[in-house]
Image (cartoon, rainbow, N blue to C red):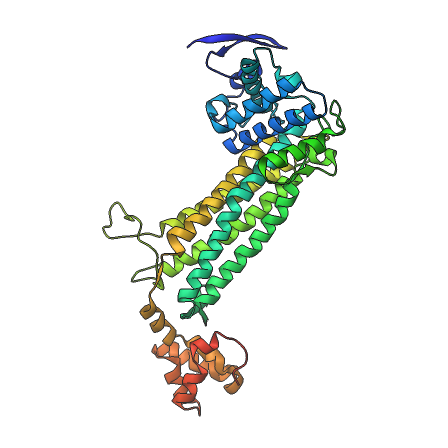
Length: 459
């Protein structure tokens, strides 16, 4: 393969001829061959946006020649429009500051800007002006996560909630057997079931929204250790204004650069909010699986859309594939949170040194959850049908309905009726008719499942 010679502060080495990156990226490619995983495109895009905003801010401060600043910005736009991950080959498992990834982007932009100007644009002196990997990479974590949450996760999460509301409008009136400990309990309506799910998601959304605000505070301007050495004191504010204008999401300088560089507490907290959402989606997915179970030997309360054959050996078998897939991605998000939590503890003095793995896992969690919300909404919840005959039969035989008579006949008497109904497999109403002074019409009213869903004291 054709190669060319590049030089950095450590000397010369060969770089692939078609590569836009230069020597420092090539050293990283050679040094870090641990996983063949690279930082996600969303993270690289955030770095490109950061370099574009930094060039404009430095130009406005009179620190960077206008032609060079424009060339860097145009190079960033070119990469954003015609993105090629082959130019960003650095392994996730690299130096803990992700200096290699920062220099990778610096070098790509310097190469393109140099070609455009016909003069040398330096990756350090020009593209990285007023910056350090130590404030740029934490900022890129925040920017990429904030944009992904705003543009992908929140719309998907809100869509899922709207689908639940719409579904409830169609089937919410249907009453089914409630369950605690997986055992029969008092009746609930589908509007209550779906409303409970939607409330979980709304609470999770609130938590994500809260953390989004923290992610919009950036370390950029703190440079190497938080003191802002080699950066104009006005740079942080100017940079954030440029970045906000370019992305449409409002960013601001962190209140304390030492905290923003030395820790990754905001990323840890954001991951915690994502884990909470994952737990909610896992609960919903498992409820769907249980209600769909059967169709003969399970609960068979609903029928999820039949999407594909469920077995390579059992003809006719259809499985709840979407809830299962979502449950697995939720497990991955919980695992990602554990990794981010451990990585967040690796803030040693003035720098966290597990930044790349935080970026990788945080962005993966956001993407998985966004996709999971959409899949549950469009491929499971919107299309399931309620098997009313099965629900009605189970509800009529549910001895727990006798709970409604507790205030009238006492717990002990109600327990005797329930036990007899269980033993004889008879409707509790028929047994209650034999052991209480109430007429069938009165018992039908007292034990009406729809009425019991409303709660309160019936006496």
